[in-house]
Image (cartoon, rainbow over all chains, first blue to last red; front, side, top):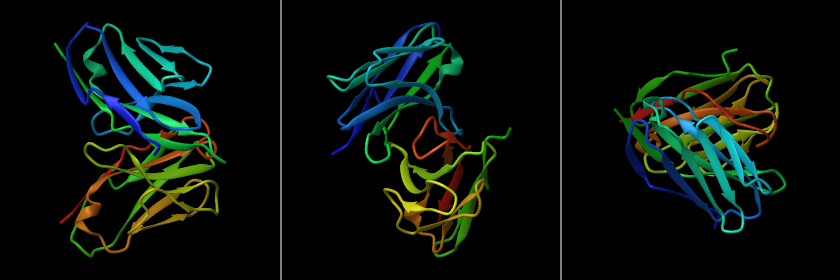
Length: 113
Length: 113
């Protein structure tokens, strides 16, 4: 079964600290993996996209890694800010006749002063 | 550019009532999608439209119908609302079927009593 799991379910960190969110998937055949940020009451917004051959990709203070062999990805947030408080969703695309997209349940991050 | 817009933002229905959720995009995207988001679960695809004039069922289509009115607009209809359809509904669009980033609207929060 094609699944995407994320951990932790929720996380609280102090402003300025770093954190790492995890994503494990069983989707096969793999096409690409995206991390989305969803602010409360808003739609998700894409942060990064990674294909099979990419190990690391950065977007400002966000750095995503991908290990296609172990089917794991992580999203590292550096020097967190209050505006980083949001849900972070891992989305994996399956290579079929068209790419099928499977969403993870998300990790809720709260950054407190 | 407004991106993806949705109306209404909030709606309360009684069981058995019908309603249509509206979605429009101004990015000249070919593909559009309707998702529902429930607590603790990933976004689930209800219906999608690969291109103007075509629609297909997603993961959870029961109780819903869609219309791709033109390239810009994609509506979701609940013919006879049920409490199980209480959810947040998101419309999204992309260049092609799961091609490139999906851009999401702000969502419609629907409560069925």
